[in-house]
Length: 314
Image (cartoon, rainbow, N blue to C red; front, side):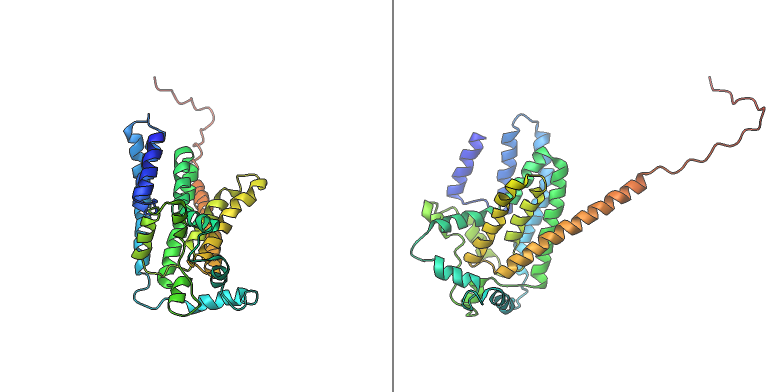
């Protein structure tokens, strides 16, 4: 694990943080090999068997959402109107992204929260994957339940991008729909000398079209991971766990990546995911229980009184 950690840090600085699904898959697979170095190779290849379909689906998601607009103008005005309706009365008619950048963002100066925001934004690409890998290692049944919900949430978001392509605040500012907004989700890396840390993330942002704002899967994934474990931890730890989706929400709105309405719809998707998948699992379990019951056997034929017993075979 020490060798793996050194190689990971080297790749981090030279290539960038593992935000690409296939690149992240390689690091996660080698981490499981390093953690269970004494296991035979058929065990390590089991990770590829279980995970490759998942990673290919995530890679397809990353690529296909770039074509979701189909050449049409993405929705933006109604998202701006929704945020102004919710917060304009308190923010002087501005949307939260514009207000936050006006008060907190300075192009020539980096603050501590810019660094934290870059870390929180990056966590979207690794937290759910890392949690799923740990579950795969120690609790396969929970891993299956986790993946069902996670993939359902991902597919639901992708379908929505095709049905309702929506642009983020920085896109709306570029076309004059709101005041000036910069896309600043990666600027915090330079504050700690990690100029190459966001290389892959920047490349990925350039490779897709800006139509994946509604719903915000960034905050949806953050809330999903927390809710999956919320019932199995003590209540005193709940505020600490719930601080993660709250921090992700601030990061997305402040950095110009999403509106608040995108975040709220993402939370609705998470609730619907747990409800739909949980109901499907319950119905499937009941159906399996019914179909697994043996058919009732026929009662034995009646034997006339005084008949000799049936001889046993030798």
